[in-house]
Image (cartoon, one colour):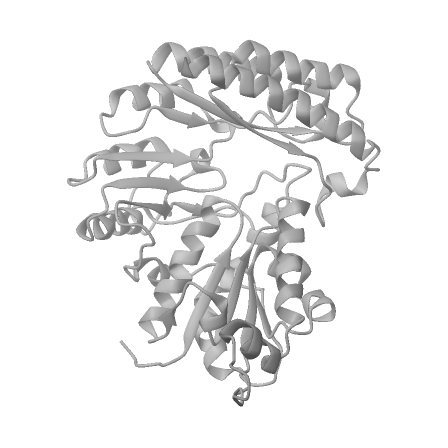
Length: 395
C-alpha cells in the first residue's frame, strides 16, 4: 500500500448500490494510501456519491454542495477548527468531487451550477477516482463516459460493516421504465461473470462477513457472461452456488422485477436453507393503464398471481414493494386501484414515493399535471394505509 497523508471524507445518498459503490471507492483510495475520515472538516478531499432516482435526493446534494461552497478555504478552517482569537489560521484547499448518478445526469452542468466542484465522475468510472485526484490541479475534470467497470475494483477487501456486505451481480438496467433514470445514468444491463461473483463472496467470508446481499437494479435478469466454452449461469443457478459457500450464514437479493420473476425462483427460495425468505417486488401502481404508461411489462393480474404463488410456496415469507403516486395523468380511479391493491395484498413494507420527473426519461416528456397538494394527499393516504397494515402484522 502506498503512503499518502491526504484524508478523504465520503458521503453517499440513495440505494444499496450506492452503499456498495462507496465501499469500492473507499477501498480503492485506501489501496493508494489515502486515509478515511468521518468529518468533512478533517478532510483534504470531499466526495459526494449521489443518487438521481428522486428529485428530493438531488436537492439534498445541491444543498450539501452549496453548504461547502459558502465557506472560503480560510472561513472553513476558522469555523470548523475553531481557531482561537489572535491565532493565524492556515488556509486549506479542499478538493470536492461529485460522483455517481447525478454526475452522469448533469455532466458539465455541474460546474456551471457549483463552481466549487473540482471533478465529476459517473458510476461506470469510479475506478478512475484515485488517478483523477492524483493529477488534479486547477483543472475541472469530467469522467462520465465509461461503459464497463474493471473487475478488480470489487476486490479491494474494504467493507464498511463487519458482519454483512453487498455484492454486485449486475450493473445498470435495460428495462427503460418511463419514469426511471437508471439506464441513462448507469447504462444498460451488464452482468458480471459468476466466477468473479463467487470469488468476491468467498473473499468477504474470509474477512469474517457472514451475511451477503446480492445486488442489482434487476437481479432476476442476471445471466453470467459466457467465456469461450464456459456455460452460462442464470440467477437461479447463481443462488444455488452462493448457498453452497461455507461460512455464509444468510444471504438475500434485491431488487427483483415482476416480469422476470417466476414460480421456479420461489421454489428455489423455499429450498435453499441459507437464502432469506424475503422478496422486494416493486409494483409501482395498481392501475393497468398507469403500468402500461410506465412501460412496466406486466399487468395487475400477473402481479397478483405472483404474490399468491410466492406466499403459497415460500412459507413464512416477507414481501415488500415500491409505489409511485401522482404519475402524470393518474386519475382518482387509477389511484383507487393502487389503494385497493395495497389493501388486498397487505405488504409487510412499502416504500411510497411522490412522482418527480427525471431527466431524459420518457415520462419527463409528459406534462406533470397533478398539483403538489394532490400528490401529497395521495402519498399520505397510501402511507397511512401501509402503516396500519404493518402495525397489524407486527402484533
